[in-house]
Amino acid sequence: MLKKWWHNTIGYQIYPKSFQDTNGDGVGDLKGITAHLDDLADLGINVIWLCPVNKSPMKDHGYDISDYEEIDPMFGSKDDLKELIREADSRGIRILMDLVVNHTSSEHPWFQRALADPDGEYGKYYIIQEGRDGKAPNNWRSIFGGSAWERIGDSNRYYLHLFTKWQPDLNWENPALRREIYEMVNRWLDLGIRGFRVDAISHLKKDFSCPDLPANGADGLADGFAYFTNAEGIGAYFQDLKENTFARYDAMTIGEVDEGLPPDTLAEYIGDNGYFSTIFDFCHSIFHVNAPQWKDKPVAMMDAIKKLLFEKQEMIRGRGLLCNYLENHDLSRTVERFIPESEIDFYSSSLVGGINFFLPGIVFLYQGQAIGMRDFRKDRLDAFRDPTTFVLYEEQIKNGMTAEEAFDQINRESREHSRTPMQWSSAPNAGFSTAEPWFAVNPNYHSINYEAQKKDPDSLYAFYKKMIALRKSGDFQELFIYGAFTPLYEEESGVIAYRRSDGKRDVLIINNAKPAKTTLLLPGAVQSILLSNYDTVVINDGVIELKRYQMAVIELQ
Image (cartoon, rainbow, N blue to C red):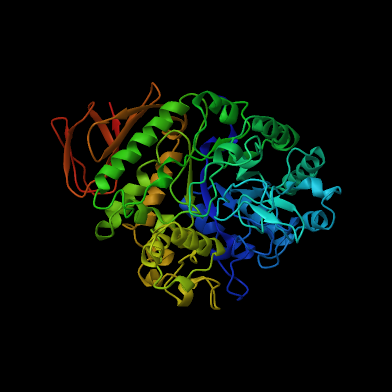
């Protein structure tokens, strides 16, 4: 594997609306991120991924871009971004932006011109088709619910939107559009951006060979993922995008590529000459300890997660590096997903944080993860803010759920849980803003906040700092990036353990993901204890006794 500058990434995803407000309007801004660069450097971060800060009507919280070239005024200005890049660079931190090029906002000038003249130049920038028999061109369901097609006025023309109706899909078959995109990307790279997280990239190519599919819901619609996710020929777009932009700047790129890639294609995606630097491992994101399937079976769920994590590592072996993460802006908080509420404490939270932290690949944290921010469940539907939340709620009602069941699922799985304002301190509004925040702060900020944990050497934040320091240390960094991976104790229920070795060092990472102690025979003699979330690791005669939710990183002889 060719060594790259981004291989030692300890990344941190920021949702700017909820990170830090500096101008008193209740919305986070770029200056707020700059103000906390020292805090991020203290944690050990060296790459920041910014969720969209481009101009947007915010129908999908910035993932509906109306001007690729400008910063939305709610976040500040391009000069503020330049300052952030400069200040981050002085601390050894690189800035990545979100690149949203599967679709634009319906308010983008390109789309407005397309609506005015669907047969003209800009009509070809989007996917506009004739309806069939007074209906949409096919019965695909939008990823966010409802039809994936929206009628244009009273005509028989429809435009495709795989997400909300305010996010019309771009037509990547059009070389003129692609040229516009490449020029825009290169201007951001010229500005000093060091790369991108590439949003919804697996949907660029659509296969319209099958007009209608068997309906699988009361709405008469069908999930068309097989026809618009990693469709045959999509690699040509990825390669063209890379050659005309990223490769020219040695940029870091993280592709949001959905699960299901055949193993023999992984090298094409993230190998030494792959389309992207890395892709996310989404395998754990489908699990929630309070979902009906796993209710009262948390250890069985952790066993299922272990199986998928290990399968993914076996699949990727030698082909490149995955991006290992647990939280992002589209998921509820990790401890809420993995640990029963009655068991959530420092030990279970720190264990969860360490489960995939030392796997081969790069690491990304999400804002608030290192202090254990929690979900903020609502007591009424209108307390939510995301339009998609209400669409999904209505879809669940149509599919036979009661109002109570639908609300419970929304409360459990809503992506809004990860978007509550960052809890900096116990000051009003958690220190996020001097004004009423755009979205309600979790009331638990008095007990869970950055300021308190930074002062506490035994806090979750302090433990994350220790994990990061170990992973970045001169003695072990190469091992944790490039070392061999060997799963261990695969049949031991509730234990997630693996070995990392490079011919010079041999390290065991072991996690007891159970609320009871467990005893195991070690695979070798112990050289030293590198890290644990307990003060002591009990080892006698080659046998380790792990307490409830204990994790340990052990160097073997």
